[in-house]
Length: 128
Image 1 (cartoon, one colour):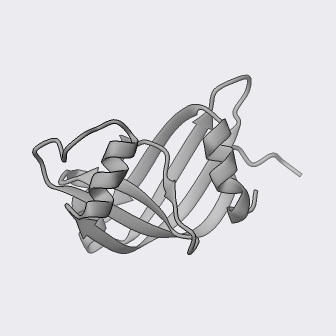
Image 2 (cartoon, rainbow, N blue to C red):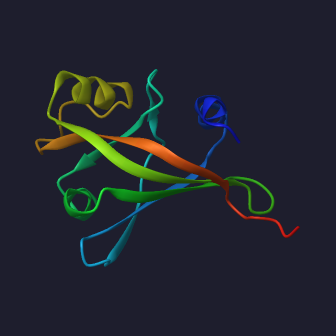
């Protein structure tokens, strides 16, 4: 799959998503996440609360996103990511929350964390 195909894929495919991060020592954390938001410059972003995934990205900008599509077999996509920017409690964060029906910041600090996509892989690599 190509990066240009991802927005439509995520718009039309239902499934479960997991974002994995690691701290500076390599201790890994995985958490269920919503689908990424896509931006015209090719970056994607996730809304994050001030929890472990966000803390890990402060010392290690690399992450892996795994999407398991609903249906038969093991269909989906894996994205290797590098954090490139973040916003804290900005109007854009608020708009993303409202777009998802989440309202005001949950009375917590919310971040919109931007990533470049380094690599796109299928969920399962089939033997050649």
